[in-house]
Amino acid sequence: MSHRLNQTILAIEFILKERVLWDDYQAAFEDMINNCSTAHAPWYVVPANKKWYRNLVVARTIAGTLEAMNPQFPPAEKGLANIVVPD
Image (cartoon, rainbow, N blue to C red; front, side):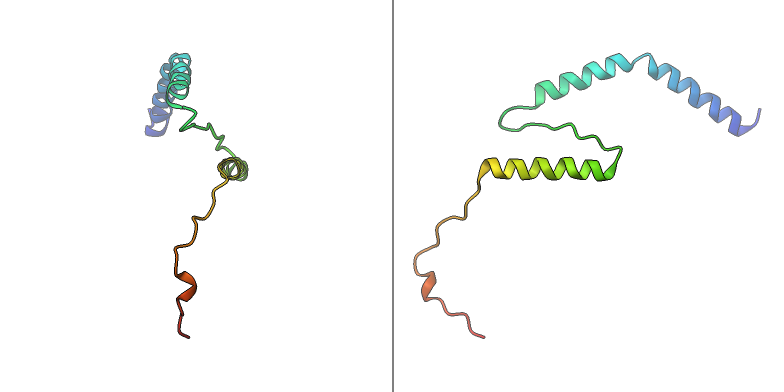
């Protein structure tokens, strides 16, 4: 048997063995997301098979989070108006 054919057969056998465990993988994934994601530190499942869509989802998630946080600059320290920056 050629090496290439042998490698293909081994790959197919591996895929078939792993396919039987698919439901277990999905259940473990769901458990991980449900038990690790909290209101304080949420997890997001981002589809990554299209880079442009992945980037869009990440950018919208970050923008929405920042808008909800409404971050503000801290008040300026006293005496900053007296500082002169030379040319």
